[in-house]
Structures are given as structure tokens and as C-alpha cells.
Image 1 (cartoon, helix red, strand yellow):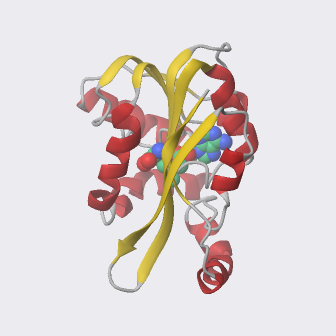
Image 2 (image 1 turned 180 degrees about the vertical axis):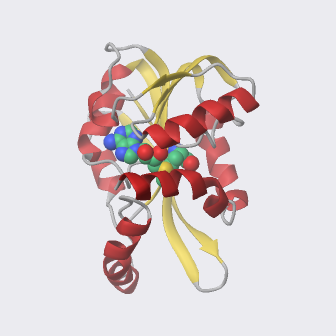
Length: 204
Ligand SMILES: C[S@@+](CC[C@H](N)C(=O)[O-])C[C@H]1O[C@@H](n2cnc3c(N)ncnc32)[C@H](O)[C@@H]1O
């Protein structure tokens, strides 16, 4: 497992470069809109650091040590100070009502317990604070969902744990957040491949 995690961290940016130009607008709609004291859950290699703009402080949670090493080097490259924590999104090591904004991009597909991570995001946000999210989700079309289920075992193995068909929208609507504003759309990769995505924010 450690070797596959190491490989995933080493090649994440290379693999992501295939889709990064399509993903960037959604990084801007989420990370780019965060303000004040900001927490990123599952920061990976630090792909969002270049779009964070209105921050007083940046805290990043990343449980994978290979990813943390990459994150640190990206932070140095962009000359940004990031407080990096190794805790998991399911058990954040921060007090209640602490951050102005919390965000995840392409992370809720990978965590062990989606509900626990959303609940922790809620807990550490100040009242009125926003939880921004950009995630790929389960397909609404039966054929699409069937394909996701079929590919999921291979995909989980190749990505060290990403689930293709999580109903993240349902988890968000069932959470404690007062309002959830989200947009559903398909990220088109060529003519054939369309990946169902959601982007938006929830208010505490
Ligand atoms: C697909 S990567 C996305 C990285 C980055 N957010 C991006 O947009 O490029 C998912 C990240 O979530 C992290 N992760 C996995 N399980 C987690 C958990 N339970 N809590 C927090 N982060 C987690 C992984 O280590 C990985 O770095």
C-alpha cells in the first residue's frame, strides 16, 4: 500500500495535467472564493495553492505523508505559508468555530466517511462561514452508474482509494448546514467521456 501511495503522490500532478485546464475553473469557484482563515481538507500536492487569494491564513490537512512532502514543496514554490496537519478530515484537530472558509476539491470521493468529514467541516467553521466543494459524483443515468460500478474496483486500486459513484449531494443535503447551493454538471473529456460533477458551497 505504501508503494502505491508513493506512486500516486509522485504521478498525481502528471496524471492531473490531462484534465487540469478543465478543472481549474472549479478550483477558482471554490478555493478561489475562500476568505479569511481558510482550511483545505485533503490538499494533496497543493494544486489549489495558486488560486487562493483572499486569505489571512491557510491550513491544509493531508494524511498521506508522500502527498504532504509534495504539498510542502508546492507551498515553497509559490512562496506561501501553509500550516500543514497530518490529521484526517474525519477527525480535525481544530477547535469549534475556528475557520472562515473550509473547502475540498476531489476529496470526498476518497475519504473513509463522507458524513463525518462534512460534519467536521461544519464544526470547525465559524457561524455564517462557508464550506466550498468541488467533487465528482455518482451518475444519474443508469448506464453511467452501471459503468461507474463496474470500473470502481480497478479505479480504487489505481488511485489508492477513489470511489467513482458516491452520492455526495445526498450527504450534503442531509448535513447540518443551513443552506446548500450546488450546481450539477458533466465534465466533458473528449466526445465519449462525461464525468458527473458538483460544485458549490454550504453555509453554516
Ligand atoms: C484526489 S486527491 C485531491 C487532491 C487535491 N485536493 C486536488 O484537488 O488536487 C485526494 C486527496 O485526499 C486525501 N485524503 C484521503 N483520505 C482523506 C481523509 N480521510 N481526510 C483528508 N484527506 C484525505 C488524499 O491523501 C489525497 O491527497
